[in-house]
Amino acid sequence: MVKKRLNELLFALTVVSLNFVTVACIGSEHDTSSTLYPPSLDLKKPPSEMLQLGEEKIKVFVGFFLFDIASINTAEQTFKADFSLRLQWHDSRLTLKSRNEKSMPAHYGLADIWHPDIRFLNSQKFEKLYDGFVEINDQGDVSTVQRYVGEFTTKFALKDFPIDTQMLSIILGTSGRYSSDDLEFVFDPSRSGTQEELTIADWSITSESAQNAPMTFFSIDTSRSVSLSSLSFLFKARRHAGYYTWKIVVPLTLIVLMAFAVFWIDPAKLGAQVTISTASVITVVAFQFSLGYLLPKISYLTRIDTFILGSTIFVFLALAESIVTSAVAAKKHAAVARKIDLWSRWLFSASFLLLFFISFVF
Image (cartoon, rainbow, N blue to C red; front, side, top):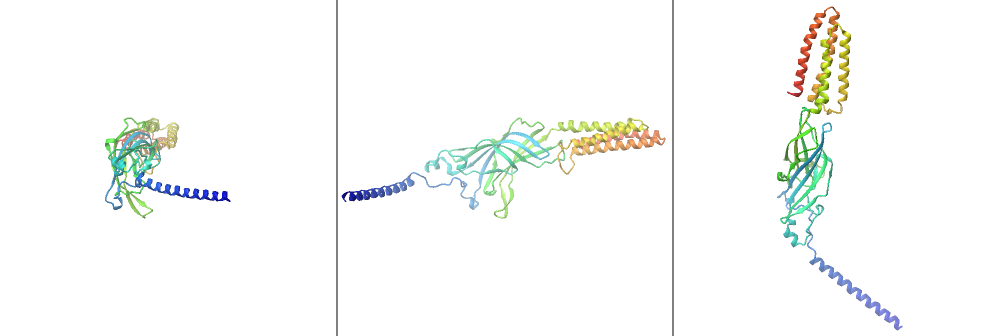
């Protein structure tokens, strides 16, 4: 009986002790949160609290350096570029004074703070070569650098192909959460440039520039058009025409000259004339089929298309002329046939030379 009462007394003392410890712990946790941790501060929100009132604009300074343009695909109107971006903006919450007053960490990752959340508006294939790092100075200026490799689309004006000059563009924008009234990209020329030598062989970059022009998009959420800030990096590229000269112009010129050989053959020799003319026609048709992978598939004629079409017409006209002179000679008018050949030599040669100048000079 005594033993039972001693056990009950011991159990009661244990319960009282546990309750006391629990209350002490709760009080201790309450005091710790009020003295050791700073007030909650969401650094992922935009640095300007005036955005909702539309009274202040976040300015993001952008430095752009082009390392390389690996290729330019004329047929698909795309190009591959390797470049780096340096973004800088001001966040007053991250000054040295603010960080010290609120016991905030000294180092941050890009995912820990607000950043512009950039997008490339004319690319669907790009990758980051390394994780972007963040630097914050004592005044609260935040900067980050990232390197990208991607494929970008651009609209080519190919009327002068293959002696054309194209404007390549990389369009930088945001994810769409901020309008052009809230955020503005500002080009920083002091932190921009281009590698002196690029690996692309058949093009030359002649000039670089940047253009800040808001772009208008339709928002599904608000069912209205929204103007978003964007920054376009423009590169003027000039094509080297040597490849197309040796692959198209020179062979096609030789085919045409072969067709013109019938003007120096006696009109009475119908077999020789027909053989050369037919061979020229078959050759020029087969040559056009082989050009499918070299020429852009567009609905209008380029300079090289004009030259190819004109050359083909000259080959068929030479065939027609040989048939006419042979028919005239067969009717005992050999002198007239030879005279037609004589005039054709000068007329066809001068016309072909004019075609060349129209295609590649004027």
